[in-house]
Image (cartoon, rainbow, N blue to C red; front, side, top):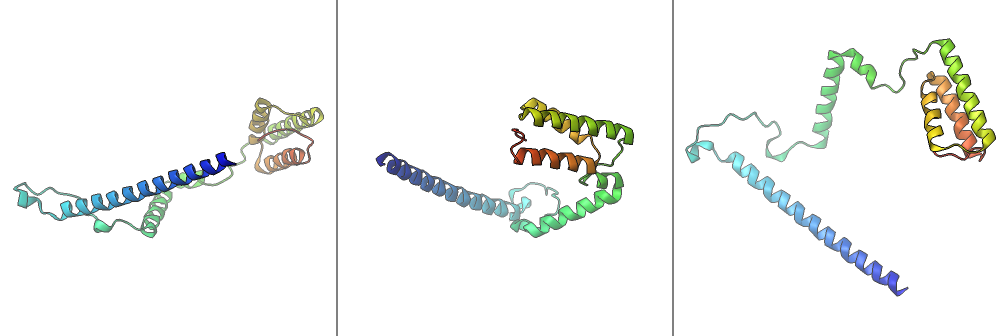
Length: 164
């Protein structure tokens, strides 16, 4: 019991130390930001240097807010979709079902036979599970969902000892 109390005290002290370190980092970041803003405001001519052309900072010294960043990202994504409609497909969940129906049927039967064999055995190894998942991934979307449902049902009912 004394050991647990000692460990709790040590853990609390370590958390307090880390908290103070984070506060120190935040203060340093604020200092650096203030220094950088002051350096930007100082004209290059006062040091006798030629003016350096910098791109305009649309957000000034304050930086961009999360909403402004989200808006910029949305605009960029919309521009990419307009420029390349094929890229818009890449973001969808399901790939097109280009599997030939006969091949899909053979693959489905193969997956079903493998799943039945593993269920009869009651156990499936990691390598076997990876192979089964690769086969299932090759099925059309509806058949893939069906096979995954059967696999999950077998695992949840205790008929198949496996890890995903």
